[in-house]
Image 1 (spheres, rainbow, N blue to C red):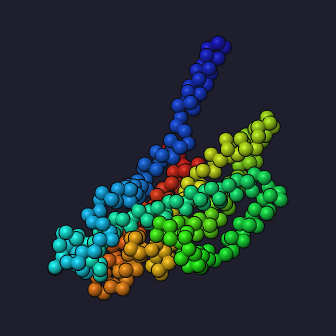
Image 2: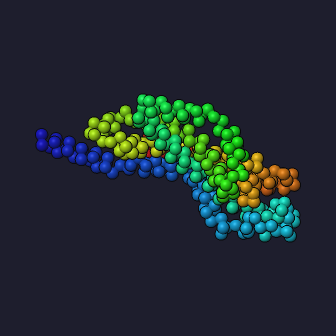
Image 3: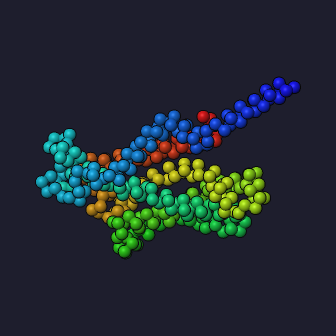
Length: 315
């Protein structure tokens, strides 16, 4: 009998040690993400563009607004008449295309990242409150969300930016502040709905009921027992939202109501190149390739994160 008890005790101890030594959820997710080559390459591409944006002042060979009167409309270095002094050539007024492309990364990558913070603050807060409080609070908040969801956001953003373009806020940072505010004001709806749905699912779990029975405050329950479980799908959604913000900036700048010239962004560079599409196509192709690379990178990274954070996946 004692031998059986000893064997049983040894098995239980071994199982407990295995559980204790088992990697956590985030560690497992990171391991799965590392095995996804497309996601890893995408993360490297995204990091590269953010590093270019951060160190653009040191990487750009020239000031992006400097006019080179001796090299107006110069072709790229690999074309006849080109020079390696201007690897991607110059535009119609003599500004170096490579320098403008590098400095444009600062605007476009910032536009992609900053609005997401407001999506999380506005949409995340509304989703948490509505999902956990329920009842009339949930009804009122979700009706507000439905109103914003029904609005044609791009049309309203265009109208808002156009009306306020000549005001003080419209001139701050070459119009970037107004553009960030307009994007943040209307695109938080998806985050609110996602967070609310997750909260509704997790607030009925046994451990949440136990915490509530022990007298734990609602704020502590939300922050400690619900929010950590909501983060995974929100992180995945963020990676799909950032390319949309970058594309929105490009569209608004392309139609002339985004970033004010001569400050370069990939959007207004495409606008400048569109007018010379048949004579200087590289002016539009270069920023278009950058936008496409960033968009694809975030898309592949989002797919990788979705698979890595799937609780049904195994190490």
